[in-house]
Every structure is written in C-alpha cells, then in structure tokens.
Length: 254
Image (cartoon, rainbow, N blue to C red):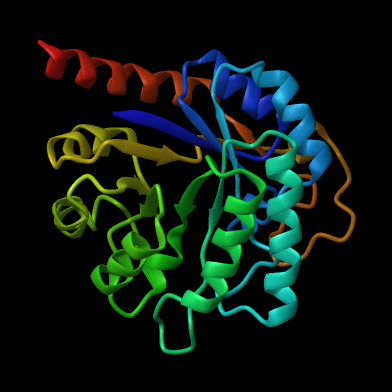
C-alpha cells in the first residue's frame, strides 16, 4: 500500500518527503477543495522533496462544481502542459457533465494534453467521481481513457462510509488502475482499506494555524471567521499514517 499526502506548500511537500510518503497531490486553497498550484509552488516543492517522492499537481482552474466551460478546459490544458514540463510525475484531473457522467470530451482533451507533454505522465481522476451519477459507470469510462488511478471516497461523504463501494471498485478495476481511498479518511480507517484490497490511501494530514490567540487584532472577521487562519501539513499525522502503512505492508509480505 502507498501513501499520498495532499499539500499546499513547499514546506508541506518537504514534510511529506521526510516522513516517507510515496506521493503528494500538490494544490492551492485546500479550504476550497483545492485548485491548481502555481508554477512557483511547483518549482519550490521540487526543491524541497529533492526526488524523494512523486509530485502530482491538482489541475482545477476554479473551485465549485466539475462542469467546465470551454474556457475552463483551455486553462487547464495550459496548466497541465506547464506543470508537466516542470517535472511533475502526473496530473490529477476530472470533469463531469450536467447529468453527472464523466465529461469524456473535456477529460479526453486533458488526457491528450498530458500525453503530448509527457507520454509517461500518470493520470489520476479526482473526487469528481464521488459527485458522479454512477461511480461504476464512471470507472468504466476511466478504464477506457487510460487512467492510472482514481481518488475516491466510494461515493460517500467519507472513505470509511464508502468502504463497501471502494471494495467493489477494486474488484471491478481488476488491477487495470489503482483505486486510492481518500476523503475524510482517518488513521483508523487505513487497516480496513488495506484489508479491502485498496493499494493506496490519500490524506490531507493538515492542521490549522492561527495568530488570533497571540493577541492579534482581527481585521475584517465576520460570522466567527478567523482571517489569520491557514493550514499546514501536520508532520505527526504523516508519520503516524506512514507507520500504519509500513506495518500493514510488512505483515502482508510475511
């Protein structure tokens, strides 16, 4: 089983690498569900990980739903080309139609732009699949499109709640692509994911930092919002997750 951590900073990328994660999903604005990271963040993250893990940028031009206009898709095509050219190992993409099916036309454009830039680029379909009409029909489309893996909570709010569907998706994929459990995943869920046959888990492993408790003056705060708050990668959570994954992998190898 492999461990992927979602990170929003070069420091977070370095933390994930130092604690033995296999991959990172690099993004910005995780509080909005994640959007495409900047080229500067990609460059700095490469320096921090120093080749110790794979970097997979999220390609999402805006927050909100996954129904994209032609202009949105054009933007994401450019983002894919630039980030892969910078050395990303793959990209994390996805799009849906109004009826909740995989938007094959849009996704194929994204896939083609990735393959044209780097024929070996890995393709991950993100949690748009959890907002799809039918996750199994969506999975079939992704198999046809040549995806490497899919990140999913099993069509439920959390991966723990979606365990049964995740197990069925593993069986349906038949090893042709990797099913990676993510979305509200707790450390305690990891053994059950392993037992269900999932070969990867994905965590945000984040904690919130705030300076309001240090006597800072809140400017523009409203409705309980904290304008000083931001998220960072929690080293302890990454370390604990890696320890669980290592123990499960060791037990399987014996």
